[in-house]
Length: 142
Image (cartoon, rainbow, N blue to C red; front, side, top):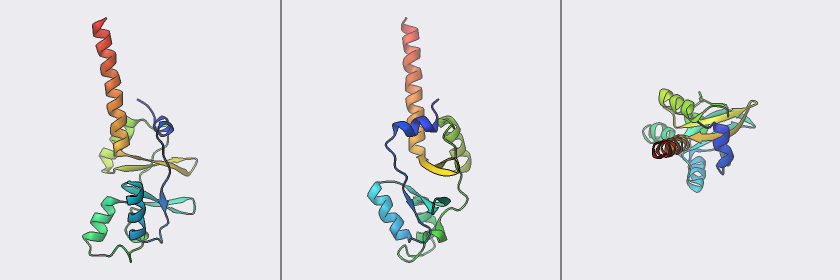
């Protein structure tokens, strides 16, 4: 199974982030523009949270708040579960399942270097299984 680092190297990725004092509306605009489901929240270079579609649904809509007036810091997830780039897709899937999260920031040398989504992990696992099936079919045919 490949590592997060290997997955990142093949994926055209850019780290999308927002500052905690920006509004939820600002975050939603950026998420829509880049077709992503979450943003890293940074104060300078320091990770202080993550804001996701789930945060919006549960902490804005259901609480009756307005996205144009609410700062990200008021609704972001503060306790962010992170991984290092040497974790495997299997390890990420297990962690995401156990912690009920869909996005994992990738930390290397105390800096955020990327973000992996559940979709990225599922694609990797499907690719790995497809490769295994092809190898087994070749073995059976020979």
